[in-house]
Amino acid sequence: MARKKKLNFRQSSSPQNVFQEAWQNMMTDMDKFLPEKMRGGQGKKKFVLWLFLLEVLVMGGLGTLAYQWFTR
Image (tube, rainbow, N blue to C red; front, side):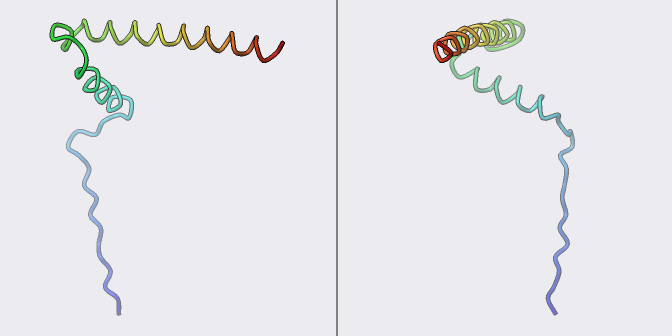
């Protein structure tokens, strides 16, 4: 007879939301290239928000130009 192993899955003591974990990972990555004074607190959050908005605007503009170019 084959032995069956009982798998014990342990959950971490503080389960995190997927979005919270992604935010934490992004913040640690941002710390690698941000200046010292922006590495903590409110300044970093504002920088990430402005970077996101700039990215959305640039990608939207490029997408619009590409769409217009392809539909001509």
